[in-house]
Image (cartoon, rainbow, N blue to C red; front, side, top):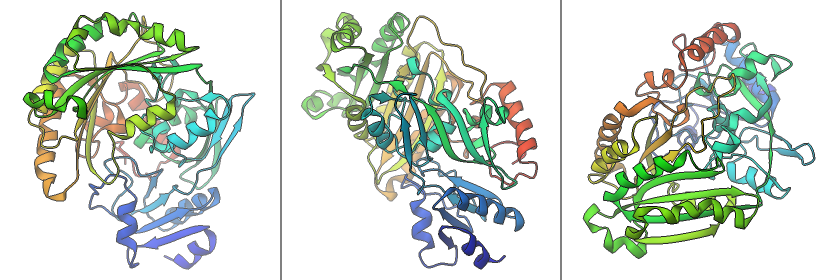
Length: 461
């Protein structure tokens, strides 16, 4: 294995497991402070697209498997694989915009926050991630449940084309007119993908004239009743309304009224993406008609919340330098049953920073998914997160989270692959796709990566 040759061909840093700074770099590859013990043999921090091509060719020549890090936000650290060559795309952050055509061309590591800022300056928008620090790479490849997803759709559906480095070390374009089957996979294959996406061409949207949010806070024991009422109105709402119930630490002004639930509260929020402020306020007026509103502990009505502000609000629930366990499920079960099970477990949560988000699908009927790898959705998406700081609390938080997820699994019709423990339970990956799409992904893997050069979740990997 001639690393000197690799260094001569690659623009960017190359680190091996024998280098003194290796462990520090390995740990930095994962945003989550709960870093797995797995580690690559070589880390290539690519500075350009050609570096990715050369790294893939080197791995192929030397019989090494390849792992890919888009931005390191995947909480299970999927890109950290033993004895592999890890291609880190974290330096690829360029963005170019065509305002008139509403087309954005982005490299994989641009963050949701930075991409939104560039778009907003041009009067454009995109269903970027709810968490501001999520890079667009894995977010898009996993499907992308972003802001206003009920109206704009999963983010991957707005991928017009992608530049992909294949297992052969070739750089090809995937679009509707060339390598269309590869574009099909780019739109949602996530960790089942069999290449390296170095650039995405995206269709952007006109920025809403107004984005407005109302929040109502309640005692935790009201979560079941709230969810039953919310489910009853969700299908009557415009798709431009994002409706959610959130469980987390009670805000300071009402914390002393939530001691019976050990400091946890639940909130019901509606965010309207509208043409004008008056239209947004009208869209959110249904919250005032909730019969449980009289029991609210605090109300924040009609707050102006451009996506930049939504990112600021969401960042509070996803603090950096913390340890995370996260899992998800799509469900069609009665929300009150799901939330009742959740609340029972939250009463025993060892960390007050742990959260749960229950997002409803809104609109009269669910929009059919186009033909793409992304293929599982439901009436609601639940995301359960254990969040804590100290390593000495790992065991108690891990035990709590596993028990909470086990209690909720009976309600699952599938999972969101970008936020599920597909290493601890590989079956969750398969359940993130329709059966036919899972089989098609395996077929495409045999076509594009017959020797399983890339690490993945398919049975042949």
